[in-house]
Length: 386
Image 1 (tube, rainbow, N blue to C red):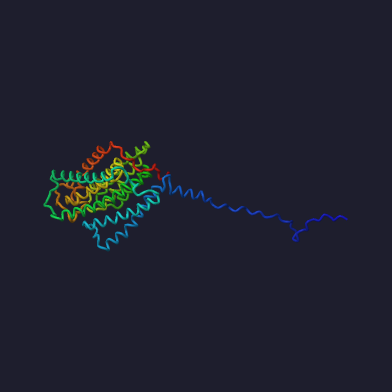
Image 2: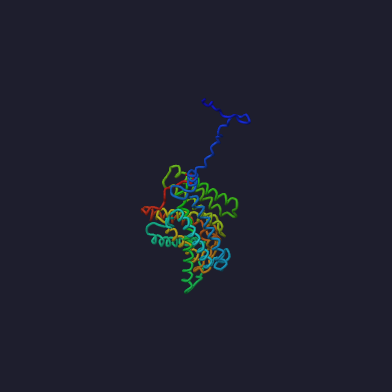
């Protein structure tokens, strides 16, 4: 007999045999390459670290390095109290600033895979431009002092130094103001001007300048802030037109507007400044930006800055932002309407300083404007939102 067909025995509980349970598929983990691509887009652009992050990192590092150096120089009694205008305070205070700036710039340059000289410090005839700038700074300040003297708003007294002290203080103040030129121009016309040029459009520039003005509205004391408001308003229409025309140089001039307003803003904390002095600081900042454009580097600006401050503070012995330095050569006093004499601010607070700035600008354009300097090491502009 053939065996009968055997069937599956019934389930003891009376249930049919169960089918294999199919679990739902587990969700796939986020695609890492896409996430990494998003992060890369946020922080990096076609030319490396985006300009906004570069500026934020540079400022953070600058503050981070500056604080311990300021504490150290104060503990060693190398600098005095705030407002002391002695050769020692000026030299060591500015030295701490230059060291901090170089350290911050070197770190950011390494991250961006650049040389620190790429920040507007290359270009032709650098030594010539530096010493030419020193001469222009001295002549410009001398023209300002001369105009005030002829107008009866400034008077000369006897020399305050004699003998070897003349050369001693001339050299000390020369070194101090070389550091001033290196720090302020290195920060404004080198790193910030270069970086903003490659990553700024009109709307970001307007937002930054607007934020500067808003800060002054909320916390300012006195009328010095009007100098910043004036330079802010003067830049709106030209920068907007450049943006609308998509001019290749729009990024540079928008960066010049921002850094000039910021330079004036930085001087509002000085004692004795009036609105003319603040406007003059912002205006001369713009002139220095033009010098970068027409000479191919910031060396003329560094020299001019040094020559102006040295002649104002040491040689003529006038007030600088309301302070008269220890160890100056000549002595001067002002009288008459502060609108022309500058009052406590000194020559930089006189309305005549605006004419001198215009003469400097004209001289730059006449002497260098028709030349063809080596192009600035500017990568193609990348917008913050790009």
